[in-house]
Amino acid sequence: MKQLIIGINKMDAVKYEEAQYNKVKEEVSKVLKSVGFKVDQIPFVPYSAFKGDNATKPSPNMPWYKGPSLLDALNNLTEPQKLTNLPLRLPVQDIYTITGIGTVPVGRVETGILKPDMKVMFEPSHVIGEVKSIEMHHEQLPQALPGDNVGFNVRGIAKNDVKRGDVAGPVDNPPSVAKTFTAQIMVLNHPSVITVGYTPVFHIHTAQIACTFLELQKKMDPATGAVKEENPQFLKTGDAAVVKIQPSRPMVIEKAKEYPQLGRFAIRDMGQTVAAGVCLDVEKRVI
Image: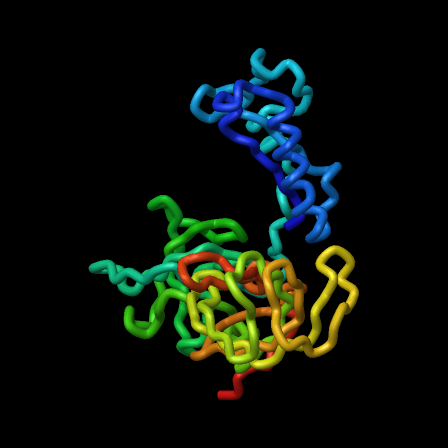
């Protein structure tokens, strides 16, 4: 995550006190520093969503605050570069069958460009189809770029051939299906400890798949990336580590350095997010 805004809401409930703002800012800053963020580059915006203070314009109730409003802070973000130079990767969110048109997968283009007449492969279902047309907001598009949420009609596949969690890519450079993968994770909130054999649910792009921890390879310093311990016995809240993971069924994941959007994931268990991470390397499944 390259850009961050911290919004401190409900300032009306604490009578717009600067001391309360500073207390929250200090506590959140400690957490951000521990994972390597440069706090002096992050705006901490006090506001009241209920009253509208500092949401879109400066508030007379907080004369002590000299920074941007929440809207100004959002407008100050720089738009990330669209990764059109990479091969197509489009995670499927849903699939529809429309009378007179056929099978229409829906999803957001993460990298590359989707064009009519392209042959695409859906992994891990391992089926090939040809893109007939692309629509966004009921308008036909000549092409779809990263960030576009589109529906695209595909010739040669039935609705049951493709499912949510599949990823579309070019036939000559299809998405990577992992047998195992190595990842760097940060344990955010786990009630006990993580050991080899632990099998929570990984949420990655549009897929949700149970995955098993095969190896705990290194424990790292989250701020510097230096190795603190080789082959640790367990991981607990606040730890960063390099681990080896095995999905319980075929799953598309890419190296985060090559395809950032397909290399990031959240790990959930017991109704909460226990960890998050990025993929460092993929051992591809052999078909």
